[in-house]
Image 1 (cartoon, one colour):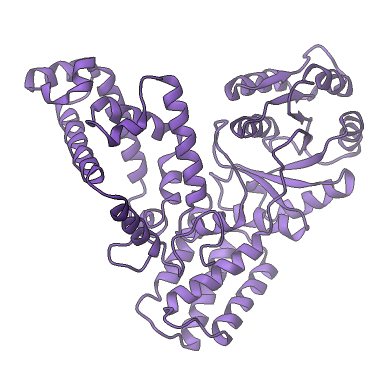
Image 2 (cartoon, helix red, strand yellow; image 1 turned 90 degrees about the horizontal axis):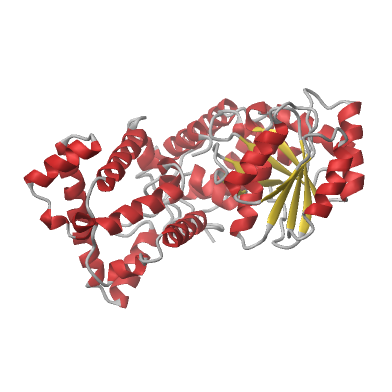
Length: 470
């Protein structure tokens, strides 16, 4: 989860209000002080922190919460709305034919971002292509070509051509059949006349529909000055913030971009081409506050299931609810889980499981869980088709053989078999449910306050793609 420290700190502060029906001025002062500390640690500009905390304090003191709303839920709603305002809007990215030019300094992640964006557009049903025009950085062509191959998208570059404008011209001609052309440009250690001149010449050749600036999240508040400089030089239609998975300064970058009156288009959250997401303020803040993000989760689940089924046309996930749940089904489900991204990110999107619950787990809990799942995968690869289809045939002698073949201890194999039995029992309960039972269960999960509910704690439910308080 991006900005883990900020999220856990904010959640901890708000959760201190549990059980309180009304707030005193002292309570609110304590809350505001903790929120200020959390935002400053995330490298948000001091003046912005003061403005935000003043607004939270004023609203908490003066506005009357709706009847039946707890003090915690009311403060959560105020903090949510103010944070959404702080990080600003999302850049409009239509799902149609277009040319996008990327700009940014050395090390910002432009080439990786080009491949990630191309992959994202391909999953939306469009045909993208990458045009690599960086003739300055050694290895830029090879990196871009490999990243495009990883994303399984069209690519054009010319390692023998020294003029980036000529490459851009030829690249557009060679990728004319693509719906979306993403033009990657060179960078520099700083924005100088040479870089501005080169970008302006490329822009004149490709006439992009939008220019996106790529910024490293580690810049923190420095993102503001860089965004302003590029805006003055070439015009910026939106920003991509990269490397949000590994910095505590991401809060500063997010807030700084909004200060420049720019908007954020995408977030880079990892190293692979799949580690990208559209920036949606409501979803982003919902996850930060532990309220989940059903829209992002649903997209990842559907995409992972489609990819897994495409690799094995004989396997249909819907059959699980009709027939017997086998180890092969479990194996395919785990393959789909791996395609959804790091387990911690996925957990953060599940209302009631991310956020506060994640804060209570040991730091290495997710790593241990992922290691366990990897072991399960290796073990199942060592099983016969008969064993995968009918795990009941696996006795002591077969466990020994599977242990030798997989290199995993017998205890881990027994653990896998127990896990399968638990999942099988759970699925049988689902199979016995009628539509009314399922509907009641979903309502309970979304309510947040009902018995056994999983809600994210906010009035109105557990958060999704839009305002969870709407």
